[in-house]
Length: 479
Figure: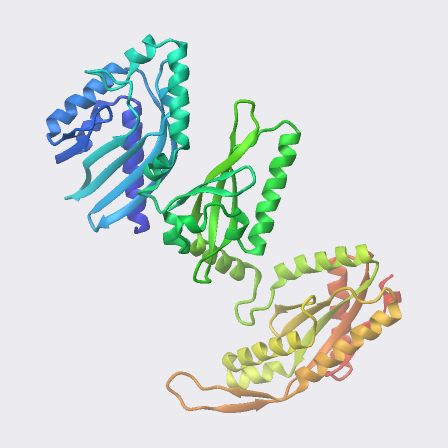
């Protein structure tokens, strides 16, 4: 559904629910002249709008105080450009002491149709176990008030049995794209809605009886395990957690991976012990993709795809912490490309961008996966080496080997294809080198700013000494 129409229909639905809860007669103005609907207390179809208004006013006169609607879930689906179906699930709390009706799950279905400038309700139906309704009633107030405690217990038992039956779950899930599931206390699936087959490709019989971990990737299993640990610790402290929400990758039958947002809540017996779990899984693959794009823009350089200064700061913090735990040295290199400005001046920024991209790739090829290569700005790069030796002299030797590899890699001739769309190939060769400043650091003896400042100073000394050189910032000069 288009997002703007989605917001419009959701607003109309919320307005409808508010009017219904507050017993507002203006509710009837929302119905189309061609309205039809099924009554909540019966199974017959009303095709006359005036008759439906009478039923609505009967409802309002029977329960005059405000009722409370507890929304559990909502699904919106396009049928055509001008017809939208809204399906919701909620509890109805009447302003009476009896709580039997509030235990039931109501499922209203509203069909909106665009009529001129407005959206009107052309059909309404609500599914709820109204087994206590008497003739002339919309809500079973008289019956509820007349039943004694024994009858109430019997109704609760039947309602509980109904909730546990698979038929009720089919009723709840037939119109939703989200996956509704149920598992026992050992995390074996006991029910899963048909939406899972549409989403992941597995039939219900291929899932029921299997452990929930089979749905997830290894990373997803780790997430579920952590959520279970959090719940277990809370239970031990006497805190009963309700719904917990987490995101995890799911496996599909055709080998695809998709992201799902999982809402999970425990089922408890009369003593409060957890006897199982139920919940809803909603696909969020596209949302995760957009979040990753935003993260990429926020933390990575758009040209070279290297970490930017913000992410570099985080990585350097992690390196300092890790080196402190393992009592070993780290190294930071400030790398500045020589003879970069003349290339830009002669061939333009397009040529300069090609050099920066190639330089980034060469830098990454010179370090380990655990190390960090970041673009600091312009033609400047920063390399962070993690977990070198516990011995300073050996660490310096290790850093010097990497720095020399970087110097040699960046000194190789750059072959640049300056061809633009619709033009012939234009190959330009450019000789470039790098001035590299290196500083060793240990534990938290220095701040990030100091480390960067010292490496920058060493790089400047390398450039002054004739470029295409490596210069260490000596530790004794740091104090």
